Length: 587
Image (cartoon, rainbow, N blue to C red; front, side):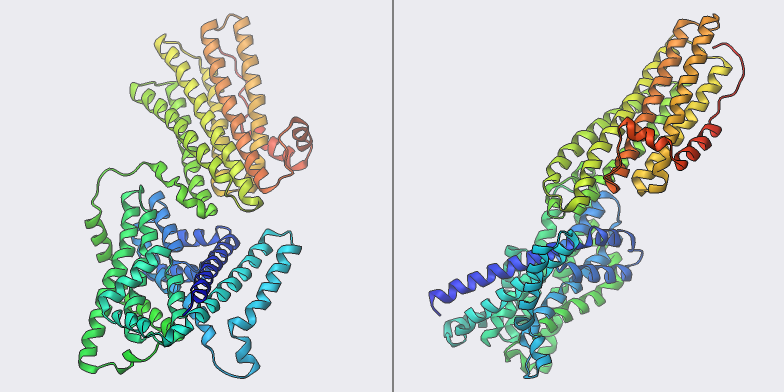
């Protein structure tokens, strides 16, 4: 084997790994986050988890990527540890798809149908189509499909180059002697584990083994331990992804490691015990790419079948390893390691932004309560929430700015922009809720009282602001586009309501029915509530803009929308719902 063969081997490996990266990235982008949402929602039983884990991994061609997603879901609290175990098992089965695809190169036959099924014959066609789509199409979806084609083409060319480069090794006795060493199960497992840990992909390391099998020097006895070690080596990516996460997220990563380590020990022990009595003669036979795919699949299917009834035991073992203690800060889910999957990083950011929305809504209720019954505990909670949202805004804005450089496609870019706007809106809502608290401190400290009419008027305004916040949260959290167009009309009704309350207040002051001090407090409450409503309108508008780039916030566009039948209907409904009572009483 000459130096040129070594260079060809290195070049083929580079093409193989690069092709796998392009194909996997294209598949993830084409999914547009749907795969993550499927994993998140449809994991009610271990069996469903196994099926979903296998399906998703089969599509994105990476068990590590699937398991890293799962660790992230567990870390953010979206998924329970028990749900993650089934998906982890299924991911091991799904990763065998790559080995089967690569084994197509070993198809034998002279007919046209057989030959066209060989990757070296049909991948050039895929490559030409992929290049054509990228050059002529402007659709990101079509370009992602083209990247999948090109990635597969590059991958298979790399595989062919590696196979051709190592073929001369079959005549090198030293190479055969080295491979004989791997027939020792422990050495074989270590070799597979180290190789996979280095390149962080069991699919890629299995592909390399399949390429080496072209020499005819790799036997079943050497290949089986290496394949099992590759399953352990792939855990390194998941273990690294769990650094700095919550206890349960670390446990999800540990489950992946235990599953593969214990599965390897059991499989090898049973295999060689049976071999001692039966004597598997095929262990000395040369292995083919198809044989490697079969062994890889059998191991993962058998170990999954063995462990599936014992998911609770795996969960208990993980909890014994990672003991309970103080949880990691919630902001740990904003990790740059998720930038390799921008859609998932966006989902993590959206989860925290949703938390901001719920905290802002809770703080509104607390602020309203402070208007009539202020306590030290209530005061402290409002300030705590307001400070917490400052921290949320700071962490999220920095993370999203860095993420914006990784966003792929128009929709992801718009979503980053929307989140950057929305986190500011929710944070400013709590600022005005804190203003309500400050007014309440003055009211309580000086024992100011509002009349029955003022209280009824304020209750009407508070009800309207609570309603607009509820609608806004539904718009953001559920992406409820139908409800999004009802926020602006309600905001306009609240503006009118605030103006009317101020007029009534001025009349009472002119008539000497209220003091300047209580009037100022009344106005402070109105102003804060009006500002909260305004930020709700902005939030809904930013969500609409994410889905429709033509939607405008400026006053001229607002005036045009006010003339539409849909707006008029929504406005009239809100006006009737929050009409002020006509009674006369002093403040």
